[in-house]
Length: 205
Image (cartoon, rainbow, N blue to C red; front, side):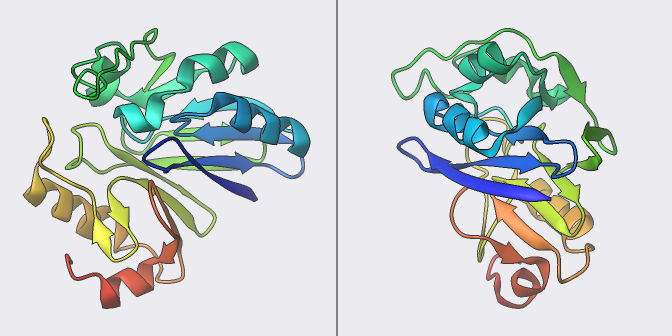
């Protein structure tokens, strides 16, 4: 599996490129900003995008969706409970930041347990509400991409509209901490970690 991390935008949200080395197909996870930089990296790596996957619908994670979709033609995917955040600037919080992000509706609405094929890889959808109602993580081959659910020694905020602290912690315990401790955690912001490290050292858990 090829994994590229690109912190993008003012809030340095982690955009991930997940590639299949055999087929050169790839998923772009959370293209939050700097579409040109993301597309240039894909070109340099020789990857064809077959999926644009959003871990949730906040502005800093979806800002470059339109440009990446236009350039690649890949379908945009988001959990059904966050679908309105793609089309509504108030729901995705861009209106709070002085912007008006609004895109076309998602091409595919995801649910817990769905699988997204990326060449010979399979990304498994884990529904982890709490940061947003439709927050998801993506599990594949000893890796998990956690969006704004779980960070290195921290957890996502739950004080935005639709957030819930109790639900967030429950999601982490039931969907993430049950994974093997060697599973590498790739969060929506900041450095990577492992499930084992978070079990031992995360003060919020």
